[in-house]
Length: 255
Image 1 (cartoon, rainbow, N blue to C red):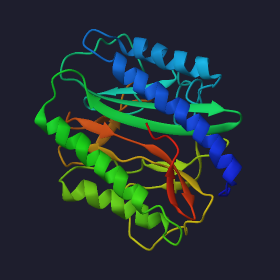
Image 2 (tube, one colour):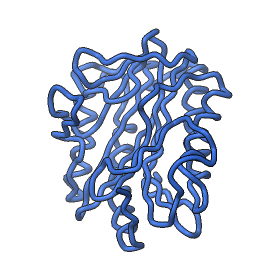
Image 3 (tube, rainbow, N blue to C red):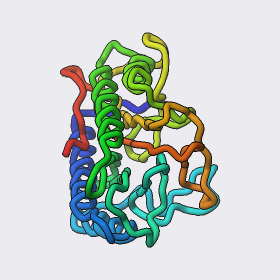
């Protein structure tokens, strides 16, 4: 069931989204060679605490997970696509890091992710991240009243495939509201003009995930959470929570 949010509810989700934006900005600013992923998680925790927000990630346990998620961010390095668990791994110059974070504030949730390179970037990594951001922008541009879920999926997928990148099948965006994951699913590839019609009041997390090699294969790491590329190639993940309004898409997690 898809819940349509009121303008007041969307404003409340925007407030939660701005906490997420601050947490991601703080994590990025703290990410440098020698810093551990657990230290980045603590940076994000402090932002949430200061805002009086809680984490929808911490303790989250969907049906596929062997254990509850132990952190407030997902920190996915290099060949990790999504759902990386923060550990004592120390970042190195040139690492490609994707950080995903959510916040719940006054009963409403928002969710966002960024990808960036620590220290000196490889040109190939910059192209991968830039394409992920273009795919996200294309998906957001398609999130308008009168379109369908398939139009968002097609816009994201076309940007990824045209650039020669792979897309992990079965993972994509989702509705957001009082919970981090709500209906509907928002695939990263699809046919235009198909799927659920988009209506004002829908709030969606749009989140492209790209694999650098152009292949789609991935596997679950032994921790039961992290998804890694089958061929060891690098991956990027970006995300915004977006409200569909009569005047166009509103990005609730804009930084």
